[in-house]
Length: 116
Image (cartoon, rainbow, N blue to C red; front, side, top):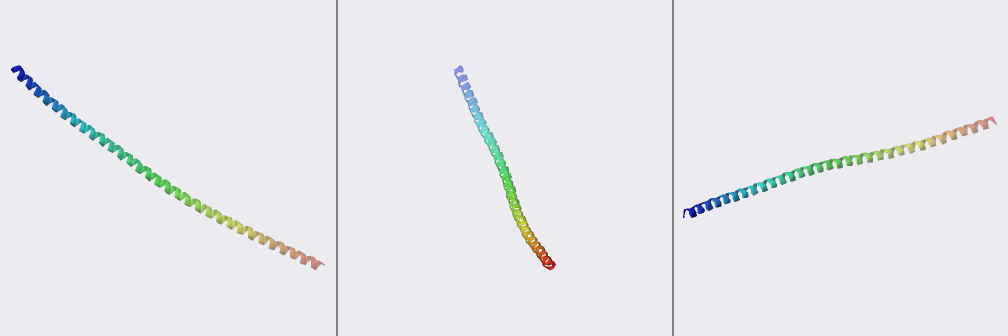
């Protein structure tokens, strides 16, 4: 009888210990899951931040490209104006040259006729 009671007591203690172990394991699992999800969240946050910075950098690059395009556009316009100005200068030069040539020619003719 004593042996039986001791056995029952030991069984109870064993049962209690098992339950404690099971509870501890549950708690451990919960904590592990929490820490895992926390790490996952942190990782996601960092990824989001990195993406955000990349977006900002891309935005700035786009702005810079836009400005470069504008600058190139203005350069092209300036070049066109220079070409037009040079063209006009050339035409003026041609006209003046012909005029001077005609005047010279006329004077030579008058001098010749006077000489005759």
